[in-house]
Image (tube, rainbow, N blue to C red):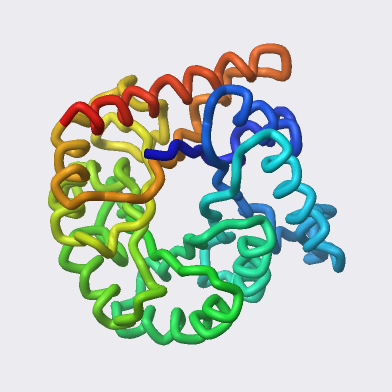
Length: 284
């Protein structure tokens, strides 16, 4: 298997360039291109001074690809900006796909609109799929959740359970539209599903992962094996469906307590956690 991690958390400390270098040095095979600041705006509504928001945005994607390749790793997937109901963020989704292709990624993860039906979200994805196909990139949708604002518990949203997830995939029904399973989201108890149920329902459509640990109540995005998820049955289910994608971490809360001096130690911790998942997978 191949091991990957998001670059968002490390780049907040080191910048994207150094983050990719350290991710490679820690042992990862690939990096997940976090594009959360794409389409971000200042208080006056103008775009922030972020490389992907500029006219020469592709040069930044090319630079990151070169840094990765110079250090022996590739971009395996990306994460487009969200929420997609935000008109500004939504207007940059094609740019996210384009940057994914230039960086060398195979899959661009684009959230569904949490509050829309499978059929409504399908219309949104139909708008993007021809462009993605032109650039040789698959689009992956992801299982989401909403807040109940009266008591701040987590409740259902688009793709939040296996039935809704499969409905979204079937509504689009395209080989270039696949599933990214967020394991932490699937294990939130108030959503009445599980990662194992999701994996078995998604089958071969499951081509990307967001791996992190939670306390089963909140969306913690912590390092695997630190909280309450039992990863053994999840790994077993991945083995049963013959999962062939990357093991990609999205434990982007873990590095919050680290700084420039010790960030590499935190990245090595992340690598060891996902390497343990790989080892368990290979042993089964």
